[in-house]
Length: 293
Image (cartoon, rainbow, N blue to C red; front, side, top):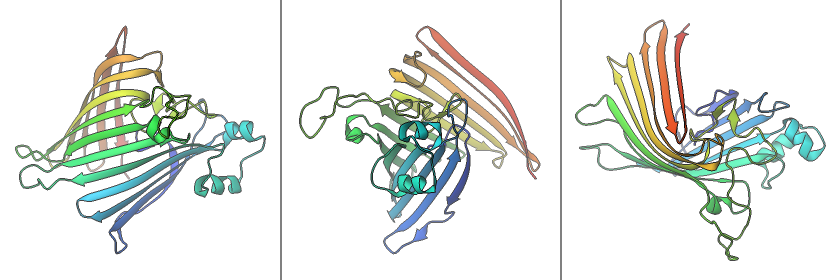
């Protein structure tokens, strides 16, 4: 769930370009401090994200991801005071949950011993909200497989991913598990930060935009010495009523396509997408030109 994976966010970033050998494996990290603003986020709150990856053996990597939205008008409304450096440090490094809005996930990547005939990597990510027990009562789950190179077409990669964001505990049982009422959680629009985990009309992190199910197929090809890049996604979704795109809920399907040509001076890219659901449809198209200096 790369929190800045879709929406453009102005940010400062500190990351490792190579894993660090710590004796018990290799560590890598990526820390980001982003800046959110109107119209969704009044008072310019901050977006703090971090990822820590540990690879104990060459084929296995496990990770911890966290995102936190803090400061801004929502912070002042909740606390009655402004936001300062001490508030930032206690929110980012403190153990308790305060006025900030937090998300976290655990992940694992396992490179299968099949590279002799078909290289493949299994990926699992399990996330939760900062409410108590949310990680098992209303989680976000991604399970996928990546084929980085096909035997008959080494320039082509394929990935298949199944996602679920919603409630595993529809009723309160009174026991240790599923004990808290008040679910399902809305992953993207709950909490004091009513602008949600989005920038403009694009979600931060997962493309589905909140509660629902999705089966997503991705294919990519890097042709002509990677000067021509082709990308395509096909998906079937079932957005639940509690979703960033509500009232556009229910089952839908669609395609996203992108083609880019890279030269020494820059890149020209064209992309488009289409999605259709019960009684509605949406489409987009665009062209982008980038010049490198």
